[in-house]
Length: 359
Length: 143
Image (cartoon, rainbow over all chains, first blue to last red; front, top):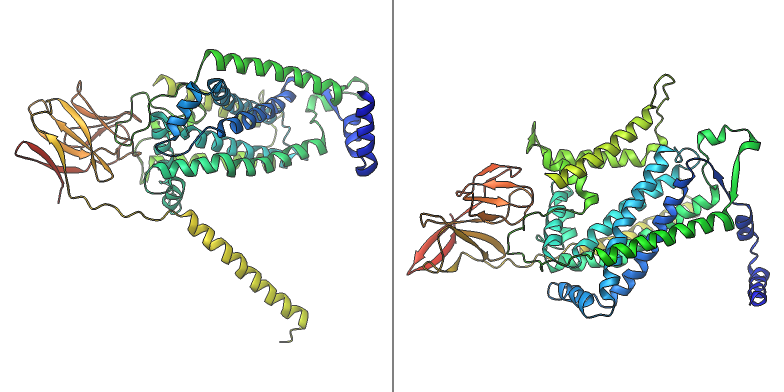
């Protein structure tokens, strides 16, 4: 077996010269320090994305978009197709874990300042990937065509409509018409299974390429150590195997969740029934929705909603450009200004999310 | 102004190129914009028999493509209002306990005349006229 393997590699090597790959595998190393655990978060996110891809393709074999078929086909998947319930539950749970780990990954990068020169573009591409991940979540939420999804989409797309000038055309574009109908479902389906995967894969490839080119970021306290005190482990096989171990752990958690906390299908969407009580967006949009809910209808002359959306838009844009913003350190402050900003943002998100579920 | 051959060809190519790109972008953008489907012109709809409709209850009626909420109050008055919440377009419901119209999405409330009384809704609900003709409830667009 080993002989065949090495022969195959030699065959490829002779034709395509595998020196760069070999160099990468042999020389890439990962710093070991007290915050090393955060190096694994991006890998877990990637793993969950691969699960999404795999289960998504499986679901695609039975799912039929359309007002009269979407809900029925998902019900068919979870009741008639062998292990259909499992595949759908894994897809839903993995989507949620994926968003969670993407957020953890982002904030760990933020607090360790790993986005600083020369890794600015890794941060920017990472942020773009996050936005597309949220778009994946939003578009995928509608596909089962149930009540919750229907009203969440109605609200979500209506909010887009309040943006001046481009809002209304954008809303019509997203909905495929004035209202949320079967046309919206067709669009969201196309966006979810074709448009987003294409764009997402491109930015993901860039993101990973940047990381491979530059290697692992070393935090300040590690960089300041004398050379002989810096500990490293080889990326291959040590780090890769540890990565794999964590993937197995996450996979088990995922299967546990999918088995014991099945995702409900709910009632079929009906444009002529009142919105059911307890309607809410998915948890990762909750902090934004809750903030919009707390704003008064009018602030001075501007609609509260509009001001809220503009605020989140600008805040997101500034967040993406963080690597290019210089914030001076204050030597006599206990917590540095940048860390303080991060803490305020995280607390805001957590408090608003909790409030959203309590109120 | 002296233009040499190369510059002239470059300009020509540039204009042609931009034209070509526009000729691709314009149809694609137009394709993405959904065609307006003809709105069925509805002036009135029948909403069932008055006798079958109990007091202190409501139902959602299709008025063309618009949802309309028809309410019979405790003292047997009929009210018809647009059922689309003026906040973010969710469909409202009649609460039998509070005798108000309520939107579950963001907790907005309206009184039985459609006036927004609490929560985020910025405007009142549009009113429709209700008539009873030979016990048949008929909803018509006001004005």
